[in-house]
Image (tube, one colour):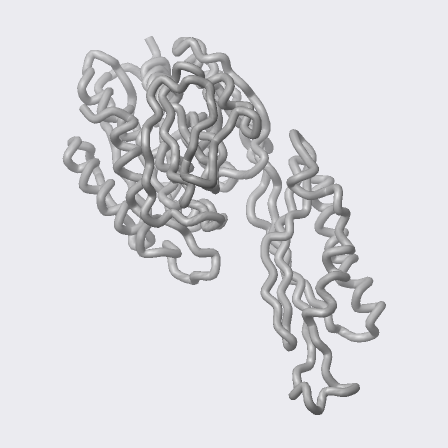
Length: 406
């Protein structure tokens, strides 16, 4: 049986960076390569109904091994990694028995307890880190490794009674499209859990409400030599857009349940400049106010400049899954019991982000999130604790076993 660490070290070698500018599903070919490998592995394990959809979604089933009543439970992780940092040619390594000191990733970057206080609690643990040139990809390949290890454990220990287990691996979660083509009906689970990030014990039933907003500034381009009183350089109006948003309401200045406006990208030229923000808040009421504020920014800029130079395209991405999950307390209670049996202290906090579960819950599949033991996602300082991944595997085994009714 492969260990969860061995699986992760294998999966991170696949470059599955998603691409928000792509119009294909999945957005990158590398995700299909990993998806095909997972189909192969699921088939070799003897799982049933193993398939990959035309969009790169992988589905598989571990049939029940008991006649006792039990719900059908899904476990879901995503294939892609964030485009915030390169996922190509990942060189991961294990730090055995971490001693609490700085970890040199390369000649110029170090992972330090001073900068990343979570390291202080990892003394004596085994960590997997990067070489400082890429992200690790534990978000969410740790989740894939945990699910695959969990399934193999159940297969190898048939004395553990469990109901029907469904597995799903999704593309493009990092760009908000992970649930776009997820077939909830054929998946057939009564409820599910995403296994997607966070320190040991984290259990999330709340996510942000999320929207993306692109403000387009339209200019007028002409040869600079004959531009007097004619040219309108759209890029020069960029500071007015940025300064219109409250500087204290950014990710770097907010925490816990505080929402924000995040300047995600700028594409600028004389003729046209696109300024893209993501808007986040746990409160639906405040979320709607943030969207209204964004609309007012564009309206005021158009009034100031006397034309329709500024336009807005705003799209809701997902909503706070607590709106659905509060009506399914048994899903959370089962997880709480499983955490306790694994001797894991549960940490129930709102996600400062979203998971596939945010969308899937509103699609009829209640789906909170369980930890992977991963930290500092989306960058070269990303690391994962092996013992915490192992605890996640144990927690999933407990969920499957404890869901069976005596």
